[in-house]
Length: 95
Length: 486
Image (cartoon, rainbow over all chains, first blue to last red; front, side):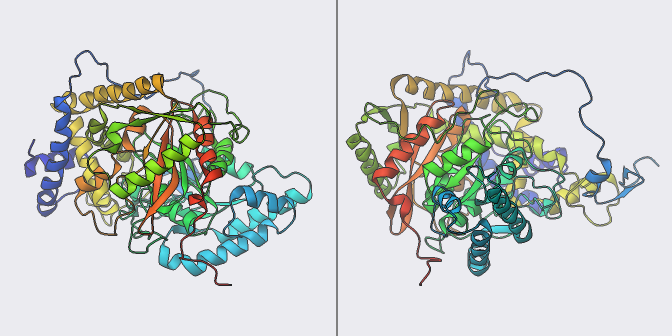
């Protein structure tokens, strides 16, 4: 299916990916061609075929609900762009 | 030393012909001299390497050396390495110093190996040419105007150029096997779940798998024995014993049943590649194997299915890069949404953005059933093709790639680049193991033979590849680049 620039902008917003009008126009053609390729799947008869999410059909393993991780906040926050008193700083959300 | 295999180096270290420090220094010197042109490393960790080499030599002096002690290698920059930048080829992680080691890195350290550094790759492992790296393209040592393949292009080029005897790569749609083929080395993608993904930056979690890249199947067996195994920290890692993959090399191939999927010898295959592959199959016949044609009827649906499933998983996995906890953050964001949007717009490259957009679109309301669910159904049919084929034959063989390495800049259109992975991509969807083995050359550019087996048949695949390397010398060919004159 052919995409319109607003479809690309919608996806970009959902993905919180900044995209100006020039970018959106540039991606429309590429993404349309990729989706046209994906549309070939519609020709396959998949009636009664269960979707395959895991190549070995494994299911998610469960474990006891116990704390196993130790607190390593300082160590992990060394990679953070901005922290204060152990908290991650972001622009004000609530006025 | 730089021409030797891991197995040969292990014997030489054991015999005291040289120390791990001498070996490490010699390879670091080669990297310094040659990698400016090749660009196969993003980070060279010389100081840590020399310390690890000294520790390995000391362990050997105490009589505590294991099979891998003191052996040098390199790690694709997708594996977290404590205290060392782990960029994943992206501006987004250019400033990211991993706070912990990936499971495979931990295992290789415990085994006494010496990592020389982190190799270049397509950004977030998305690419088939290594041209999508924030750190610039890697060149193919066989021909500097050609790509090394991708996404593990740095690992492949570094091994081919004799900068390291082996490296780890990852393979989501061919990212170990295709660069191994393009660079004339041996590369194995294990069964999904065989090797832990813990600490491996996620691209498409139901397809990603780490594996060894080296000069020989024997070396791949040595490395796989060290990195395979169950890990509680990766919920998809399989609880299943790990055989000694080296112990199983040597079985006769008499009576081996080889299937040639007819879809892997059709339109789009370079005739010179095809004749190299058919020659290789003849070698197997001379070793006592029988050959028959088989069919994998859903082959041509693998690329469309992959380009729905992988971007969908990627769009979800890459949502963690938000500019808040780690990674790139834009300057002076005026609100939280601006922080997210600009940090991600600045941090990600073009191909990564394309896949995030595709994945977000196909997962969004109204499109999910038509794309994602449909692709997962087709995925089951693709896996069934392989299971049916393995009822008839032991292994499948075909070309790893439709052509030898293409020129840098040759595939500007994303879809034409995606089509390069026609023979490798279905294997990840099915979760089966595959290995690429050097099997010829076209105009000086290597050709790879791909061998596929059922789930957990790594021992057999490695032996089948090893037997080929006992009677052919394609794996011993070296590029002119970096050859010592002395």
